[in-house]
Length: 175
Image (tube, rainbow, N blue to C red; front, top):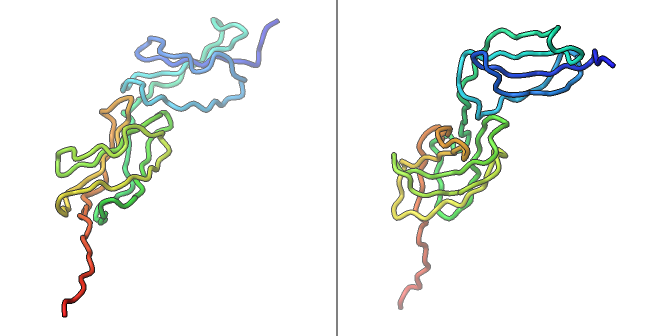
């Protein structure tokens, strides 16, 4: 029996097959696919759609298209915020669907000050505890890093201030 209603979809780069996107899907003219963030950057990708009734007879090729490097953006903190040590704050970010886990670090200037979270699912938000600091400073930034490829990361939009906790004490006047 010949199956006229199904197609296979493959990804090619530079004429070489890189992936089977779908081995069998309805021939309805549409297919949702998320480009994996691990796909190498390049400008010579094509999609091949093959009719499964006879894959050697009917094939359709897409035009060539680029795959660009995945991006990550830290939304909060945006910069300018004041964080008091030992309080909780939400760090938020946005990135592609294929990012599974990320880590979150706090930098003072250009130097990593502390790893805030070693690994967390890519939900776009994580509540962290602001670490203790010796002195108040306004040159801290948050960095969110994709664990699979640490070269993909995002920085907070600007610097934030991390304040040392105030030492409040009540003194009783002496007579």
